[in-house]
Length: 371
Image (spheres, rainbow, N blue to C red):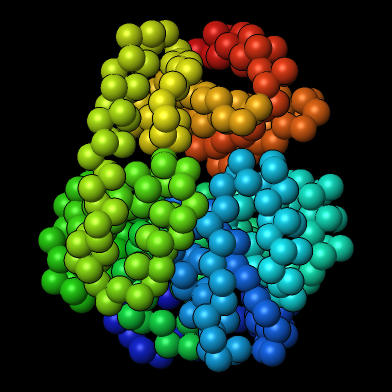
C-alpha cells in the first residue's frame, strides 16, 4: 500500500502496487498539468490542513519551479463561497483543495469547476466520487479517519520527490487529527531521528506545542495571521523555529478563553451528552469539543458558536459508540444552506441562523435517547 512507516529511509518511490497506482494516477497527472499554470492550494486551517497544504506545496513547486499560493480556508469560507471568489480574483488556473470535504457540496463544486481545473485531496467520508478526488477509500485499507491528510500528502509527494525533511510537518497532521495509534511507528522514528523527547500524550511534546499554536492562531479567525503561520512552518527547518514566532503570544489569551468555556460547559453536563453554546471572540468551539471529548470519552459532545449569520457546530465521541458525523449529517442535510460531516469520532457542520433553534431542539432530542 502507499504507506511509508519509516521517515528515515530515503528510498521513497515505487512502493505502491499497480492497483493503487491506477487509483492515484489522476492525481499525478493533475500535478504534471500545473506546469506553467498559476496554481493555488486551499487548505483547511487546522494542523492537519496546514501540514498537508505545505507538503503538497513542495510537490507542486517541484513541477512548476515556484511556490503555489497557499490559501488557508475554513468551513465558514466554504459556506461563503470564498474559494470561488479567490479563484476568480487571482485568476488561478489550477487549484488543489486539501482536508476540506468539498465533494459534499455539489452546487459549490460545480461553481468551482466553471472557474478552474481543481483536485481534492481529503480523508473524510467519500460523498461524491470522481477522477479529481483522492481519498484513502480509493487506495488504502486504512480507515479514512485514521489516515490524516498530512500523512496522505507526505506519502503522495514521496512517490515523486524526497520530502524526508518534512516528516515532522506530516506528524503535525497525525497528532492534530488523532491518527497517533495508526502511525505510532512513523511518529516514534521521527522523534528518534531528531532526538526529541516522546511522551504517552503526543500533545505534550514539541510537535504537540506546534499543534496548539496552530489551533490558537486558527481560533483568531484572522486569515492573515493564519497564513503567516503557515509560511513560517513552510520555511522552518525545525519546530523550534516555529515556536519562536511572535504569534506565540496570542496562544496564552486563546487558551484562557478555552479553559473558561470548558469549565462553563462542564457545569451543564448531562448523563449521556454535553451541549454547549460557546461565546467568545475566538473561534474555539473545536478545541472546546476536543478537550471535553477527551475528558468525557463516553459522552457525545456538541458545541455551537455564532458567526456571520451561521451557527458553526463541532462534535466529538471518543469511544466510537456513536458516529457523530452521521449524527450531524443526518440533520444538516435536511436544512437549506447547511452542511455537515467529518469522521465517526469528530465532526462538524454549519447551520443558517434562522434554522438553528430547530437544529438545536432536534439534536438534543436525539442525544437524550442515547444510552
